[in-house]
Length: 226
Image (cartoon, rainbow, N blue to C red):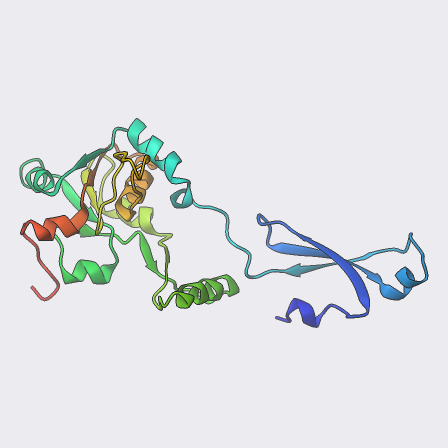
């Protein structure tokens, strides 16, 4: 694909407009010689250049946190601490859904936890994906992640809509307001819980304090080497 600069004649004056919701940039071109000699009604030639780096439309997971939090509260998603989660898993047939990356899950997780990563390593090499990789690299992050587009499909293949689920990630986040965080703190597990209730799951709980607290409390854990 030719770059836009390689197909625009430098002897042409141009104006351009772009929409973030479109994959195209429209550029109106008029010969500079016409403009130079003062013809105000010279016909314009319109070319359309495809912008491969245009950002994709916002997904449900990218919704504003305030909106997600409100839905979670309306759907009565409950937060439980790690000891309560352990009791529910053992006494009430709750399933722990670990949404961390697969590598973190393999290092250690609660027994019988199911892993479906909500974010994965960036896979594609479109101009947009390359730009995102570069942005991560700028901050010294060379394993940039993206939303897993197959998250709900995989969850639905493993868990029925009436399953009792505790969603867990590393730190957990919170829906509880504090002085510094009046809307609580978003996390991967809360985003996952939001997607679950949007897709018809009704028995969704959230692990407050995350798996960091699970391991800190010395609760049972297994790893890939086990």
